[in-house]
Image 1 (cartoon, helix red, strand yellow):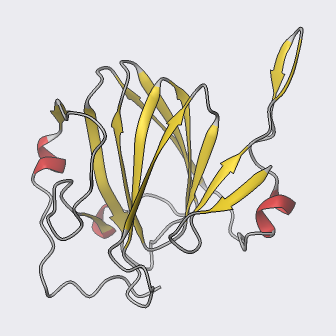
Image 2: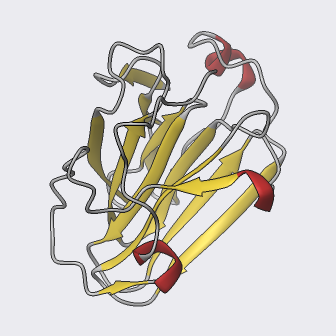
Length: 183
């Protein structure tokens, strides 16, 4: 496994090093010892799958407040998505900065997202699917989000947005009062 840190400290792009032969392929997508090398020392306790029918579907930007903050490991298992994270850690030098990258079945990249980040994605192909590993359980009372088109963050989405839930469309914009998440 190869880990490449993004410009947001603690967030990594992971290449699983696919081994292929006449039968097909094999890739190790998680190894506790390998993940320890990047400082990961928590157990994944929940795995979710997101299925998205249409290209242009946006989900996000979601996070959970402490003490329910979570590390996420994201992998696209079908189709293509433009995956985006925002650093919300109040003490971070990259506070309110974002990174976006393509995750796809073909490129087999994964994204490791530390606690204190918002996450979302835009599908670039019909029938795109993602698997999420979480280090904390979903807690509705801690669920928060930032609107996808927030002008303070100013995400440059890679494609047109055709489908978004009412819940995500109604997420709040940031204000100058937002001080971030204390992790």
